[in-house]
Image (tube, rainbow, N blue to C red; front, side, top):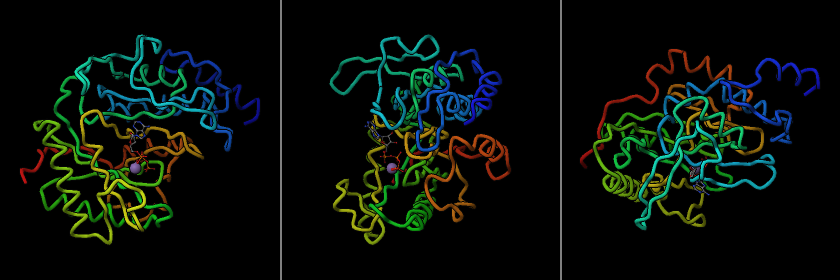
Length: 302
Ligand code: ATP
Ligand code: MN
């Protein structure tokens, strides 16, 4: 970016939501010259769309303080260094100990994370106010290395039909990476044990019935041209990338909600990027997206 343009950006969008972003000119996606300031502006622009799903969920952050090409780390906890806009919720861990997890409730919280070098946001399947009752079921479709994206789309569409047979309305999301997440919002009446049990039984049954398309085996060498249905995203403490999160991957792709009606036209899971904030905002307010992610439904009994 030219110096003049970068200066202009700085004065136009300094301190989004009152959160000071330092080192705005630091390049964090070297392959395209995208800066920390650009990333902060993206998050400021889409914050309200993102919060519709992410607000109040315990989150894990992928922080890359020196940019995505330098070491990044996954962060679940924090001792207060993220400032007052990043909230804490104590959660009992599987070993019985208590740990403070992070959540945000507004754009200031998102931007405070970005100021601290966050690129990606990953969220629990439940909200801090009702931690033990997940409000979504998510299937992470992970294709075998080199598998054509057409196959991933076909698998997502198949999964949609199979879940619809059980009465569940689902919504697809391009992950910004290789795959698609198929998400069913839930009424948060069933607990984690029930959710995980359902997700596991469902995935194993499908992998058995349609073994040419799916595998429920986590081992990569078992994929063999198939798609791994990652049902483990549905256990307590597991996270999935949040809608509209940027990814710390080449070209600054973002996780993008899409509609079933348009899925066929996408060429990869990384169709949208941090540069597409305006496009994502337009899409979100279009007819195609009315009701995305919304359905009043419980976990099937079966
Ligand atoms: P892709 O479509 O490329 O697979 P993805 O977001 O689904 O993108 P995965 O590698 O399949 O990426 O991971 C699934 C989810 O598991 C992530 O979205 C993230 O929430 C969680 N995850 C991944 N790596 C870690 C990690 N090191 N620690 C904790 N959770 C992780
Ligand atoms: Mn995945």
